Length: 457
Image (cartoon, rainbow, N blue to C red; front, top):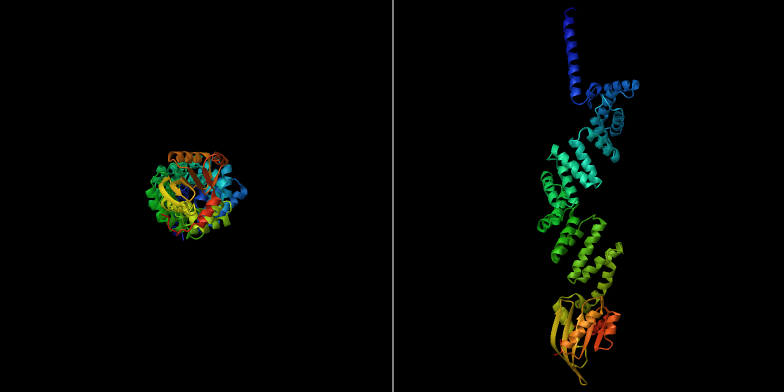
């Protein structure tokens, strides 16, 4: 028996040595004593918690015991208890408390619980102890981004990049923040790098397209938006952006294709859907395809009766859709418009011999047709002016017409508009040989006009 005593003493010494090593390791990892021995899922967890709680029952402000309990809850992701424990530790402060760790873990726990104000406060306090810590700077940058404080976002994330320059979320948020600060060229480099590290980030790809557009690199922007058109999430907005760019470049057919693809998407935000419909309707109108434009405009009015000028457009183009001649008069290319005006002139005076001697067009705004008219009772040189504007025609245009009559030595003039004349314009013609034709009378002329009837020679 006595021979076993040295062996037992050696074993006991070995056990004590192991415990001492574990304590040292625990301290090296940021904890000491009870806290250093904490481990998620370890057999000693319950014993450690029991020992810590015993110490806290004797002294509720025992920093070592609180750190041990907080570490257990934090490792087990029991965020509410962890947050409360670290809140007490922060309140104690001073010697024996790792204040940086306490504030950081308090902030992370609050963040996990959705308590953003508390988290923001915790990260800021942690930063007073370690201003260059990556986790602190990244989280503060992300929170400032959510608050739309983009200058502060750039400040924190730039600091975070010094610790980890290849962190995709940091690069991503930094690029997005710079874009929102209207610095697209600076934003591009960060967003491109973030995409290289995380190729599936479609939102960043979309923002990169916006950067290219803002930097007047429209071809690169179009390639990106074209690539994203079919994406379920980013597709509708990409279609809208691509369509708008093509509209600016007067590529109407391409714009129509963009907007039509946009309408095929499911679960589109209402405001985006409405804007796509409106832009597509305006494209159809530019192509004189009123029949396709009107259903879109009526759908918009059904959902939002006050959206832009939809009600005005419906009132204007619904009439056009039912009158092909009126549609040609207002919207057709210049050659078709002039051809229609010729027909009106040739049928204006019944049973008269009419000879057209000159036609001139002013920037697709109006057409002047000079004629020689011969009837059984009189002969005269008459100038017709056909004005395409649907608005009010003022005195200046009528004065210009009268001056032109004198230049070509016309006996009288007929001025025709699809709109109305102002009172000043009407007073100006009272003592002059100018007949003013407004929309109501023009509609009668168009209605009686047989578009298949050949011009009289």
